[in-house]
Image (cartoon, rainbow over the protein chains, first blue to last red):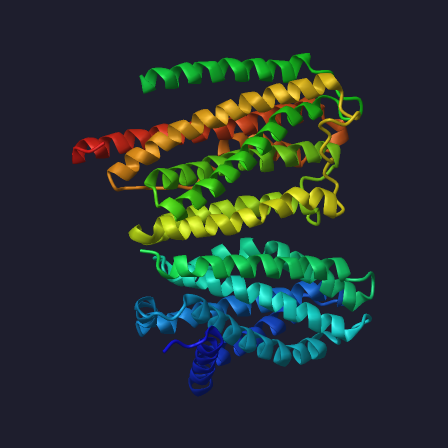
Length: 224
Length: 284
């Protein structure tokens, strides 16, 4: 009996979320790390109107927390031999990858929801542009980071200096996405200009790199 | 036979490069507003052409590797990435030297064209780091996958000049804004540097194959170009308008050739080491 890819993906997502819910080892440390970053930034950048730099600050904080969370996401599977089990099973590797991506995506979005009030409090922040645009930017931007991040985390655990390798691979690849996220966020926050072009660019980036990840994940999983 | 052909090609490249450089430095007309600094153009643009071409070769070779799993394709991919990084380094060093005189600043942080070129450089350095640090068996597969990702960014870099606001001069080839004499000399230099790039890549490829044969593939970061940077500190303290553009011109040329020569020296050293290792193992 073969299961559909949707069902397999759901099994992977629910397993990841259940494990995380019971142990909370990634979420707690990620949350605390994000809090520390916000506080340190608030000491480092003291200024009257924080809106022009906030786009950069927010995304750098999210980028660092995401890198930290993603590093952990495959470590557990490697430790318990899940990847080897997956290699010999007939289940498609794409389901594993999609499940991992969705699990990470939910985790990071949750983190962003918890961190947004912190930014508002520490920087006395309010948006000039419409709020729903910020939500759209956050969702697209997070997906862009998570899909590449999950892929490169799977790649970097295969190297000798595991945790060190992920930022080295992920940051250069994400630069175009980060630039457009930061620009779009700043445009909405300051109300200067419309983020439509940046959003289109970000959506294109997501489509291109999600496709590439899906096409190549099987190869990376089976690399020997 | 191969060696003879290689040396013949090397001699040809030397002559061609010398001729191209002479044309660029002496024969080409002086640009009206920027003066002699503009002659950096004849090393900057060809280096970019060669760099981008090699990244494309790396992309193709990586696809072929994933498809056929041939070690030759893998060696070619590794070679193209490393030599491409060297040429890209030249682009990133000669560019700011020119910009310091023409714009008054070394680097313009929000310029998409500059950022995307720097990003490409970072991507291929990360590719070389991945090649170095992955476990022996999986190196080629992981590196080829990364190469495909990295190349997906190249169209973005290429289109950046057209999509986003940038200070970087737009491509001028084929437009009436470019003096035909300058254009011919640019093409001459592009061709010369393409030959030069092919020569280095050939040399490096043979080394990579030897290295594969003795099962000790060491891929190392491209030489940093420290020699070429010697001239730069003095320029930090000088106001561009009071400085003779010639100083910047020489800075650019020395930086570029410093990087090329130090990379060649690095390759020579590596070759000597590989030969020794091969002799000890009785392979090669």
